[in-house]
Amino acid sequence: MKLVMAVIKPFKLDEAREALTSVGIQGLTATEARGFGRQKGQTEIYRGAEYTVSFLPKVKIEVVVDDSQVDAAVEAIQKAADTGRIGDGKIFVLDVSHAVRIRTGESGPEAL
Image (cartoon, helix red, strand yellow):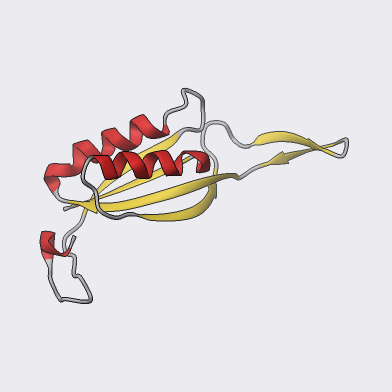
């Protein structure tokens, strides 16, 4: 099992969810986040005053998938979240050693 974690632009969340659903992923967790990467924030003007926003709004998507679904999940997120501009985000894939469905007690891939 693998944890696929992606940090993307907030307005791309629905597209990413639809893309994951279309490749057979049944559930995900989305969390509001703030961060910066190479773009290092941005400068904005509010009521004539210029100020720097250091942390930009992002969404973190987390989904645990069977090893056979990892490539499809990563590709689906990448295609859905791509705008072609800086700040599109990152995707990370981590090993998951164990999972348990609380309601039924199922463990391993059956818990997904």
